[in-house]
Image 1: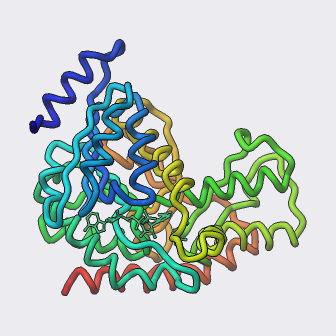
Image 2 (image 1 turned 120 degrees about the vertical axis):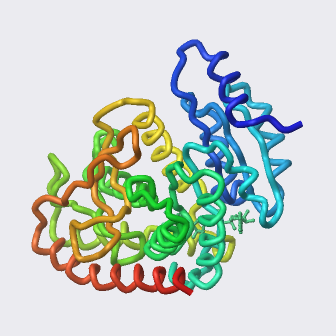
Length: 333
Ligand SMILES: NC(=O)C1=CN([C@@H]2O[C@H](COP(=O)(O)OP(=O)(O)OC[C@H]3O[C@@H](n4cnc5c(N)ncnc54)[C@H](O)[C@@H]3O)[C@@H](O)[C@H]2O)C=CC1
Ligand SMILES: O=C([O-])CC(=O)C(=O)O
């Protein structure tokens, strides 16, 4: 039996003790390695009233399974190639981990040929079914898939730069973890800003700005390299079985939850995110952004950099420009 997002949301809102703005979240790629644990975490989020799952395979089983969790969010599942629009109607936020992951020896850019068309087709469906939603892009290569998504929305006349976000939260999650280990701190007290993009040397942790820390030059070099190539560490350990899924689900659920709080009216919520930006010459760039009722409400700069960070940034910007241009050229075809 089909239920509209609105009817389900009203039921869920009525059944919660504190009435809040109903938020419908759709996950595209919901049956995948990231999609399943991400959907589980979203099912447990009190700000999610409707959870709509879409994948080209296996969605009914994931939806049935999750729907038994006794949390207020109602769950529906849609499966099959070309059926995304059905899952997207009424969505306020769409989280997108659809696409193939890396195997050892591959760069994220090696995923471009497969994932570019998946992302373009999903952007097309979003433009038609939920043109006012916020879109959170996880599919790699993020440095190119975000521009592809933007260009596709532009073709349909529904692009809003404040509502399209590349999720780089996993870089922050890793940076917090590795810095806490290095400094012998409680990880809950560590907050590292990571700017740039989401691929290798475009990932730039701002270690010089982390309060109450002291790093040797060797520490800075080693930590920066580990944060830049944290994804490769997981790809290698999984040995052909894919890339980070659980930590990405954790990071994606954290970012989605922060966005939902901002959409619900909470102020002062800031996260690093890969968005349209004029902070550097790159058209899309990750810096801290403030989230508000309309998505991104302010894109912040990156403050004062160390000479080391400035050097890394100077090298990353041309790569970010090229990777964005590659996405834009693909979408123009
Ligand atoms: N932004 C980030 O920090 C991170 C991004 N990723 C990326 O996330 C993506 C997904 O990774 P995994 O979940 O591990 O892969 P996976 O292969 O386990 O799952 C991907 C899912 O997408 C589905 N899918 C494929 N085409 C689709 C379409 N047209 N519509 C809807 N669903 C479709 C597949 O059926 C599959 O269930 C990869 O591109 C990976 O590189 C992974 C980790 C971190
Ligand atoms: O490394 C990969 O391919 C997946 C990813 O983006 C990450 O783990 O940061």
